[in-house]
Image (cartoon, rainbow, N blue to C red):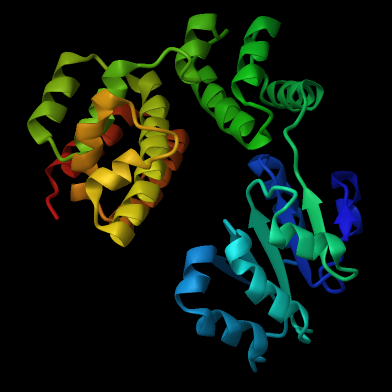
Length: 330
């Protein structure tokens, strides 16, 4: 059964037991999932990705079909689902799952997708497509944010931010968060500030710093720190650069764990890795496994939260982390 995005308020997960959210607008999907979780905060929550389910379907089936003595109702979220899960989802949809609700979060599913077709043709399964936000929606979200946070920024710079987001409100929120943090020490934000913050002008020093830190090249990392006069305003750009690179490396590292062929992993990367970056990315994959990368992502988020709460010496916090991380050998 197909629902439009404006119909999502009608969804009742106690009745609509299995829901598919798909599409490229990750921010809009996350917003809807958050609203559903907030309305059902009394329920338990479990999260899976497709690989976890395919690696051990029995664990997933057991959680779905076994009634817990301690937990009345539960929501299960499945991320990154593709047609590989079609058979499993179809089997579960034919069973009684009174105490379980399932929300499936997929990326773009083509019209011929088996998973999408299963939901569209069903009378009891719901699917919602999330297409990119148009400029009007992104403009409203942006103006609401800057008014709430009292940020002084020109209309031209607002358009720069919106154009960077490719119709995804999740990307927009990340960019606006960076700008808000930066604006705390500025009366007005210039176009140059905006271009740096949203990476339309890449800060090669910061990118090189993060790359060498993740590759455990301690001497090079120390040299970059000493040669560049990084300041407190650079901290949020540094943490976001770490997060961006770590998320890309995490996917590559998982692929490498499966095929054990580093050159193949690099060659098959999407989007493609620029030729001059291939060597250092290989070093990063060799030095960091998926478990450590996940821990680093959590740590960077904690550091960012810390420097937002305590603005006294953020550059010291970030520099200490970088130096320590570049020294750690697994």
